[in-house]
Length: 96
Image 1 (cartoon, rainbow, N blue to C red):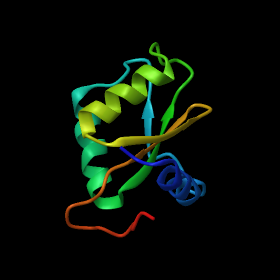
Image 2 (image 1 turned 135 degrees about the horizontal axis):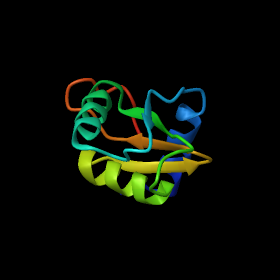
Image 3 (image 1 turned 90 degrees about the vertical axis):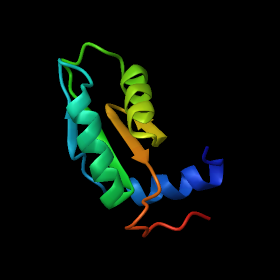
């Protein structure tokens, strides 16, 4: 679990990031979770965009992605979810 200070730090890091994954009307599937997990291993911090036609609400999508990738949800802002997971091999972000 992340502390408030760590979340604030990660939010500032994620501010300039563009979403690299989109959740559409199909919702979250196994393949997407696998790809996001691999991207988190390389990047540690990323944004996922939820499209207008997604049938699930953003809290449900965030919970599914967080559970499936073992990542922390840093923030849900608008239709974007910011995820963080410490990388095993590519550790670049050092939390306060």
